[in-house]
Image (tube, rainbow, N blue to C red; front, top):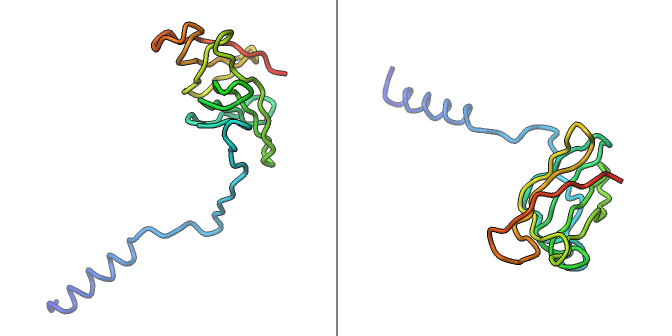
Length: 128
C-alpha cells in the first residue's frame, strides 16, 4: 500500500468508528425546580416505586427550606410528598430513596434536629 492510501484508509477508519448520536433519541425537560417555593438541589437519582411513579429527594427547598421528598408522574407532574422540618425530622437528604418489600420508603438525612454535622438520621416514609 502506498503512503497516501494508508493515510486515506486510517482517516476513513477514524470517521467510521466515531460515535454517532442514537437515532430516534429525544430529550425532554419534565420539570424545572423553582427553589424555595418548590424543592431545590435534587442531588440524588430517582427511583421508580411500585405505584409506577418516580420518587426523589432534594437537599433544600420544600415547605421549610430543609429539603423534601418529591414524586414525579411519568407525564412530568411533580408534587412534594414530604417537607423536612429540621427541628422535628432532620434535614438535607443527599442520597436516593429505596422502597422496601413492605412498600415503605427509606432514606437518610445528613442533619439531625441537633443541627450538628455528622448527626444524620435514617427515616421511613409510608406511601400515601
